[in-house]
Length: 500
Image (cartoon, rainbow, N blue to C red; front, side, top):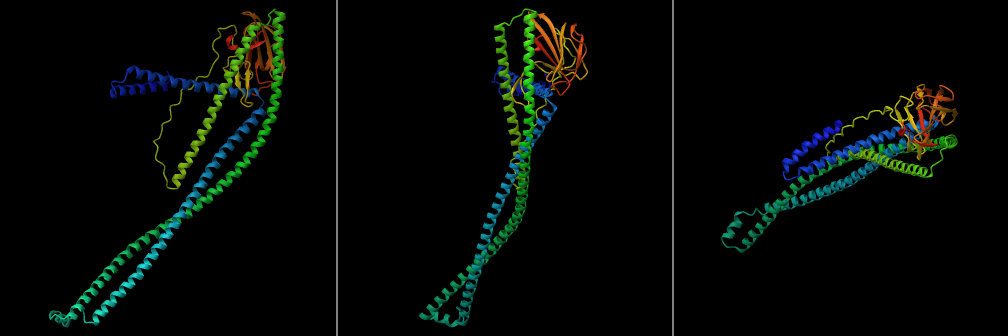
């Protein structure tokens, strides 16, 4: 049980206890089943991660079977492509920044237009108020002057005439009262207008403060817009330069791929020739003819394994695309959050998420003790297994017809079983190669081959199990030290694991 699993088990136990307290009616068996399901899912995910890491290691090792020039060309194109993808994302973010700055500039301009309109409206209202005050003050003054000329409403003569019942005096007094009411109304209206003037002056001051702030924001937005435009234009130029470089890198890679495809044709021709040679050996020397049913079964199994490899490669391709999309989306979200901070529009805070604990590192595979017909030809670990896999550069499924063992250059290579060395040869694909015939084993002619040797330890002829036959190297179509080990049954390539 891994550390991460122990942690989960503890958490699950606490959760189970909590559920039991909170919901006594909840079935204990159901809780256990759910915990088991979660644990099974975690184990499956961990196994998939480990298998993916192993496949990635195998794919990387596959590059050791290609030329240094091809690796360099592929790496250069991959790096340029990554830069192009990043530049495209950066440009998209910069264009979003520019669009946000333009939108902010447009918003500020609109708010300024409304603020200036409000300022003009308030100024006109104040002007109308001042004019109305002037008219009201004039009316009040006129009434006061006329009242003064007539001696005022309360003079003694008018009072005596009213007391004596004089009709003209009554009418005069009534008119005087009317004049006084008009004067009072005018004075009250003047007070209202003064209060309105004060309120409008306050509003005008507030609007002018808003205008000042908007003008400052407009200036800052214009600067941001200019910077965003300059950044976008520079990123566009950078992207165009990277795309031009990408075209050159693709052309250079195509040249190296053409060379590789030529080498692969030679490799296939060499493999076909070896297969024909070994089938002839099995038939003529040992009288073993090809079993048609067995051959059909072998081809069917090979087709099944190839299909599985294709489906696995497609799943990994989809997963890689999803990873890139998630990374791009994360970058866009971070850029959006940054824009919100710049434009004072904070997004709702999200609680920080704790990253899941890293899985325990898988131990490096080591050759197990030999309990089979063959013993291990080298003491180094296996770096690539037999089977179909997607070529990391050509992107098509290719059978890795042997097992790669990560021996260092100069490390001893031993005969996997007793037999006869029938060839010490060299070709541009396998490099220095030993072919060792083990005779009839379990009803088949078993042959082992040892590729990319630095040098041979002995010539052709009988050899015993564990006897030194050569030294690991990187000759032929190889760019890193290792031993490529193959097993053949009646000339057909088979997985060495079943014999080791």
